[in-house]
Amino acid sequence: MVSNLNLQQQNKYLEAQVKTASPIQLVCMLYDGAIKFANFALAGIKEKNIEKKTVNIVKTEKIINELRISLNFEKGGEISTNLDKLYDFMYTYLIDANANEDIAKLEHVIRILSMLRESWYAIANKQTAAPQSQQAPLETVKKPPQLQPANAPKANERLDLAC
Image (tube, rainbow, N blue to C red; front, side, top):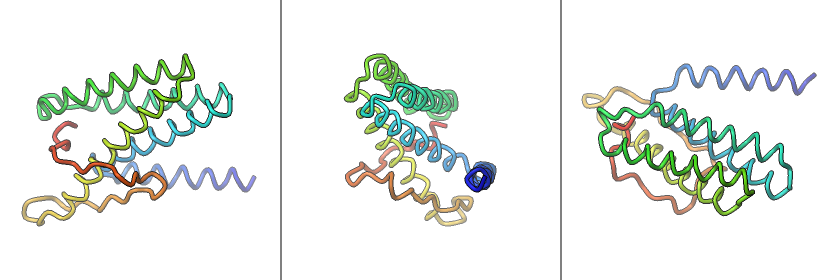
């Protein structure tokens, strides 16, 4: 019963985070979730646990679909188009990884998601540092420590226009 209460508290906390998050913070949260579930699926493949693999790949696919439908092609232009193609590519790789228990394809998706997430975190934190006359205040987005890749690239494009 204690764990059920703890889960309810965690769900309420997550719900509050989502309701108060900026659009960029929401995108960062989606990437965090996709990476978390993809890693769970990877563990499922390694453990030969079909249910764990399948459930978590499907969760990752749903998040990628959510990211895809949130693209704003009018504002984002070429960046949105490229992200759409990348999301399609990852979705296809996830289907293959699920059907064939392909660890390499799943790891490739995790690397892409990690690089994209790192870019979005950089954008969110860069906007936080902008003078208030130029930018509305945005709470600094902190990366969960367990998800930080050591050699992730920095953002050099305006990805914030893509959504």
